[in-house]
Length: 158
Image (cartoon, rainbow, N blue to C red; front, side, top):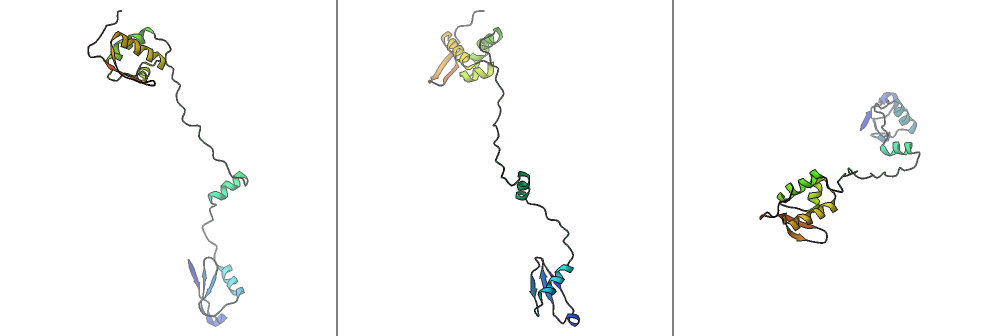
């Protein structure tokens, strides 16, 4: 932003002088001495807006001149599962009643729905397969997949 100062010719014997906001003098007509430019700058009213410190300046002041290290997050905290290690009566009945009706039966699905450990779910599915309530679809060393048996099979003796 450039502000123009018009100096009266009759008083100083000079032409117009332009002074920018950065206080650099740009003569329009005759050359003016440095002391005259300085006196014109001093007469200019002070700026209204105060300087806002930058982010770098504030962090440097608060850190005492040292750069702060980045703090890494601890990661997501999972809730601890409290799954059963052994069957109780209600869960065992639910195993024989609900699991043979599932379309996709895996140890992870059974473990999640019945709230039992994975090892207990694996052994329970092996027992259901031996009794003929579910049918083996695929067996892999890491994952076993079963499905419901359309023929039925043995019914559990109560």
